[in-house]
Image (cartoon, rainbow, N blue to C red; front, side, top):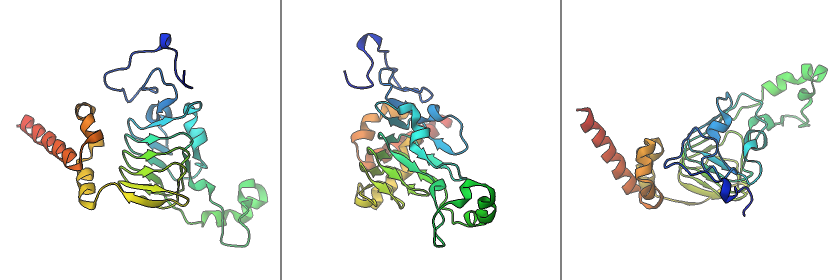
Length: 237
């Protein structure tokens, strides 16, 4: 039996459509958790529905182990339907050290007179802003995302990649620092997918067309979106 699996006699039947409010969408796989119900309301982390994290042993510890140095004002925002591989790390802006002078040592954090004499240095440091991940992004095992990065919809982050700059929609990136390996689609097809935004469809429509979402073309997704809009308009008349 694989690590994290549940014995056959204890398995629970899976629902026809996953419930985005349930922590473990696959009852017999505790190694997979939906992050939205795991994290709940948070001033610093916002995750969309159906985005999941997998770890064979520490899936429930995502916030403590995978979102590091998050004691600043910057937020981590992740869209819907993202797949986050084990030990993916989001490094937040609280990790930054001053580098305007001779030493990068963070005297301020130790308080007391060190704090009084250096707080203005920390407050004057440039801010990189929120870390924002789009929808339908796949993070490979042990990938790392640095502060303030923006990752576009449909991107793939390769195993072990260290993402230090923004990632275009539907790009595959890898390496340290991560570079674009190739684009999954051309500009016109990316525009089609962005406009169709299948991740915003009602879950029933996603379910009906799940196979096409997995195997179809951008034109197929565009067509389904157009048909759904037309049907909704007809129903409203």
